[in-house]
Amino acid sequence: MAKNILKILALFIVGMIGGIFAEEIFWPYFVERPLFYKYRLEKAPIYVTEKKEIKIQENTALKDAISQVEKTVVFIRSKTKTGKILEGSGFILTSDGLIITLAELIPEGSKISLFVEREIFSPQVLKRDLNKNLALLKIEKKNLSTAGFFNFEKLKLGERVFLIGISFENGNIKNFVDEGIVKSFDENKIETNIQGSKEFLGTPLFDIEGRALGINYLSKEGKLISIPITHIRSFASI
Image (cartoon, rainbow, N blue to C red; front, side):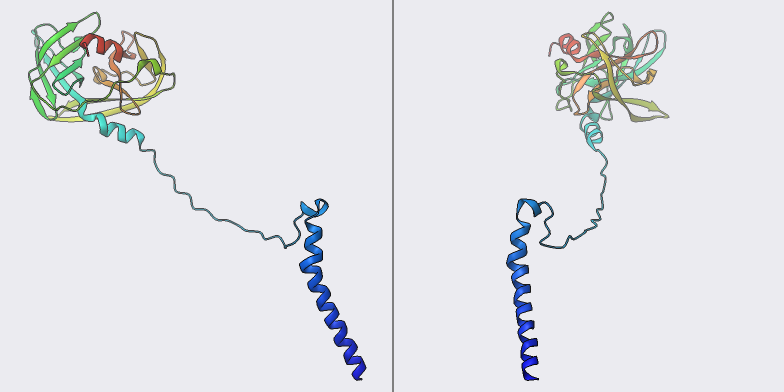
């Protein structure tokens, strides 16, 4: 009886030692061999189901750019000799009061009112050219908000752009915005996919970083066209 117990105990010890040897030495040695390595069987596979919560944040680039340049836009109202009222926008070129707009918005001899940051000015017309459809105005005010100028040589098709204008409705001045992309351009004009509207006359066109690209007018066909910033800077000598 005692011999049987000793045999069982001996078998148990041998089996335990053999199991330890196989698990810790023998099996790891083989699974690291080229034939077995790709299976990596030294450990049982563990399957993990990962749950991710993804929060999509709105692209704020456009809103940031609008906030950056909205104070550079001005509202223009002119009254012609015949009593006709013309309204549109313009934008500030320099902090000391140089403002660009369309010549068609300020006919010769008209009375001009300029709304800048909720103040009303009677600007001086420094320069006006109907062929270029540009007019340079000056007001006596310092430290005005300005925008940077886009490098026209870097303009590409598909460039994301936006315009800002100011309208006057029911005694209230309000800003409006429209956005699109550049669909064609040359040295004399920029065309976007923004639909033309009379209220867009004189509105500045900006890139997504808030740099001035041009000033908008309507073609005879009603298309929105931008006069490039290169023409504006040359006209204003800045």
